[in-house]
Length: 158
Image (cartoon, rainbow, N blue to C red; front, top):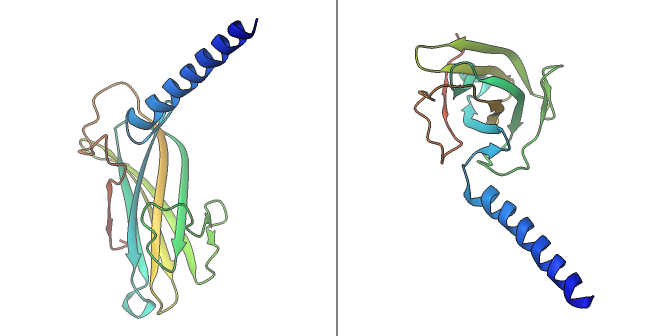
């Protein structure tokens, strides 16, 4: 009886470990059927316009599951402790920054999902756009590497 219980426990741990191993060393930037892409940029001071567009490149036809915008006083790269923005209300936890608008556009080989943000201070601010998406059938021609979730661009607000 004790041996059977021990055998069941070992098999359960082995199955759980195999799943965790596949999640850790499998396809980068995935969360089940979803993938993640992000991009960060500096928002210029208000005296230099105070606005920036930051976007990510996605495969054509990808379905967007979730879009997150973060604005903070320092570039925290891929850390998880960025100050959040409310995409519905277009407000941010840092009160001198806000979301202006979102853009979604199909290009020849990929689609863009971008956000225009603004800061009204002279202090440095940084923005991070994170998109969870589900690719549809077809080849990803966005030029993004499957092993690097950071894939996008930053530029002036048009």
